[in-house]
Image (cartoon, rainbow over all chains, first blue to last red; front, side, top):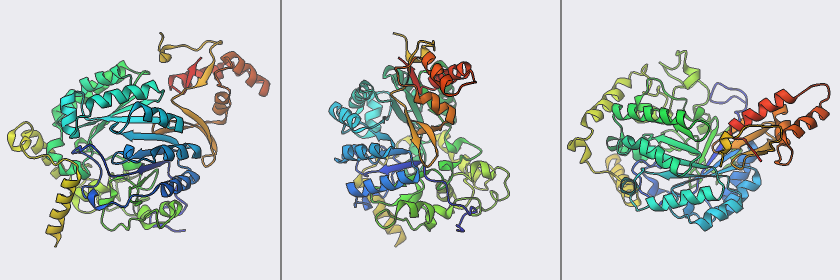
Length: 387
Length: 96
C-alpha cells in the first residue's frame, strides 16, 4: 500500500502506549502539557474501551504502557486497568503527582502487577512546590515516594524545570538522593499547552541553564551506577531540533481521555488533522492506515530548508507542533533549527525574556494556573476572537 | 550493607533478574527483551540463554556448567562472566 509518507512498507508497530485516562487533576501546574481547552472534553473512555485499546496495542507489539492524565489516580478503575495491562504483558508505568495515593493503594497497585511509579515534584521545597502545584502536596509527595520505594518499585522522580525552580537543581538532586530514587528526570518544560500560555513566566535564562547543566553533569558523574539522571537542554536553547517522538507515528501512541488517538500528546492543536478516535476505529487502523498517523511519516512532506538538508534523516525536521506554534505551518522546519528563517525570532524572544527575568514588568504578570475555570476562560476568549 | 551496585561477580554469586526489570519473550520482536522504566533492550539469543538461567538459585559457575553442557565444544566461561558483569552494571540482574 502506498501511504502519504515515503515508505511503501507497513510502519513499524508502536512501542509506547500513553493512556491519558482523565484530564481531571487536583494540581494546577502552569506548565501542564494538557491542551488549554481541556474543559471541552468530558466524555471519558470507560474501562472496557481502555481494555480493548490495550489489548489491540499489545497485539501489535507495544511493550511500554504509561498511565497518565491529568491525574490517573482519579480513575477508580485504575487497579483493574493495571491488572489487565500486566496480564497482557505490558511493562506498566504509572505517571502521577502522588495526590490521591496512599500506602494501601501503592500496595494494591503492586499486587495488581504495576511495574513502576514515576512521582512528579514541582520543586525541592514545600513553599515553591505547593505554590506551583496550586495545592499543599509536598509532604504527601515525600511520603508517597517513600512508600513507592518501600514496596519495591523502581522509582523515577520527575522534576519539571523552568525559570522559577531552575536555580534549585542542586537541592532537587539532593532530595532525590535522600529519597533513594533510581532515576531522576530533570524534565525541561516543553512549551505546549499551558506552558506555552505561561512561557514568559517559565522560560529560563541562559545563565540558569548553564548552571543547571553543570550541576546535573557533576551529579551524573558522582552517582554513576547508582542513580540515573536524565537532563536535556530545552529546545528553545538549541541550534538543531530534536527528533521529536523519535519520528511522527514511529514509536509513540497517545490516547486522550475521550479516545482521540495522537502521535504525540501535543498534536491535538494541529490544523488539518481528523483526530481518529478509538471508539470508531481499531488501534491497528489508526496506526497503520489513518491519514493523521501517516501525515508526517517519512520525508516526503518536508519543505525547504529540510527537504535538501543533509541532516533531515537525523532529526526529521524536529517537532511538528513547535513548527506550527512558532511559524503557523506544521510542515515548516522546527524553528529551533538555525537554518529555519524563523529561528532568529525565537532567539530574540528567549533573549528578551532573559533580559526581563526578575524584573517586575515580567514577574508581576499573572500566572494562568491549569484548572477548569481558566480553561473555560481561554476557550471563551478564543471563541470571541474567531467569531 | 554493601549497595547492590557495588557488589562484584564471583563464581558463587547467584544472579537473578532484578526486581526493577522484567525479562520476557516478545512475539512481535521475535526476541527476548529486558523492560525497565520507559525503556526496552532487545537481546541476542545467547544473552537470552544466559538470562533464562538467572533464577537466583543457580550460581554463576553452575550457569556456565549448564551452558557448556548444552553447547559442547565451546568454553563459555569468559563470555558468560563478561555478559553477567555487563548485565549487573546495567541493573538487569542482582546477585543473591
